[in-house]
Image (tube, rainbow, N blue to C red; front, side, top):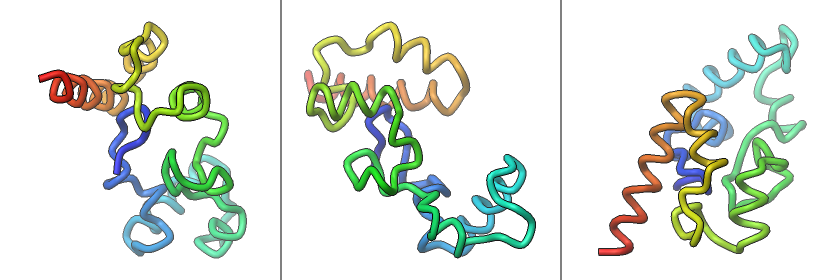
Length: 120
């Protein structure tokens, strides 16, 4: 499973938390560090508040960032599964986004590999 932006959903604690206790612990701890969960709160509150993700093509009520600009452009505006399918790939905005951290850079690289494979 891959996000529209190329992030690997298969290893994402945000997506895995509802079914994977180890991922849930990591995710809950991170949410507490971010101030999004109070001490004493945990997975019941995560589930109640729908603070997890079912992927870019899943239910927007359970998408980590339902207001994501990449999701809006790729899936909503263009009806694509991921950005590598776009005629404007890679757009300047996606390239700029990928420069924010190693995970985003790896996501763009994954999309470039998909694009190359599709055009072989």
